Length: 242
Image (cartoon, rainbow, N blue to C red; front, side, top):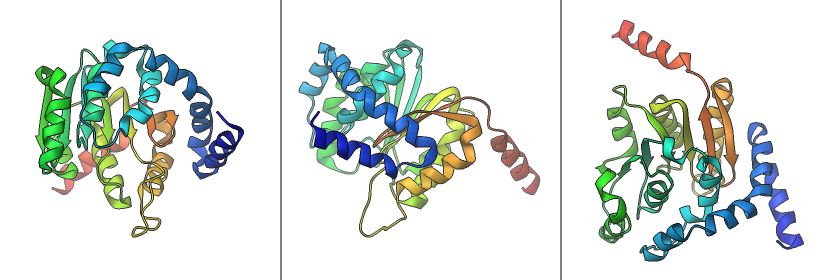
């Protein structure tokens, strides 16, 4: 890495909120090693090579997933992602979690992306369930006691959508499970401050006692460390009000 690249990376750390700054620095210092380790897996390289991708986005951060889960790959049994597009994250999860059932949620309304999704995920079709719908609708429909080991959110990046998806997804993560967000540092001129980062920062501030940050970069991952009592209390309150 050049000196200028290192300076730019270190300058980025100022954009992370307090709870994410140390994990972001750790991620920065370990990513080259993790990238080399992941690249040594020929089967992963082959999956990427056979894929039909408009852009390779998830693959850019696959080494963080590898670093977080390489010691527990076989333990993950239920994986949920919201926002699949061409299936890059499904392919990563399918390879990384060989024993997991994969649930992929998307609008699936772009014909080319759907064709690419079907082609790219074909090696994992026997353990893949694709659900068509909006993130909010599908996550609401899953509030029936289902629990997942890993949940990945890559749908609405606006403030309200990110916060709502997070609030709906958090109860679906089992204790000891993981919640991952994409595009923490994403911006858009039409949205100003109403983007992913402030929504995630606000949520992390309220849930710091129930999770630990695993990695932070363009993507952020937390592990649920204990039951969140507010989830039960809200459910009880809703029943009383109803």
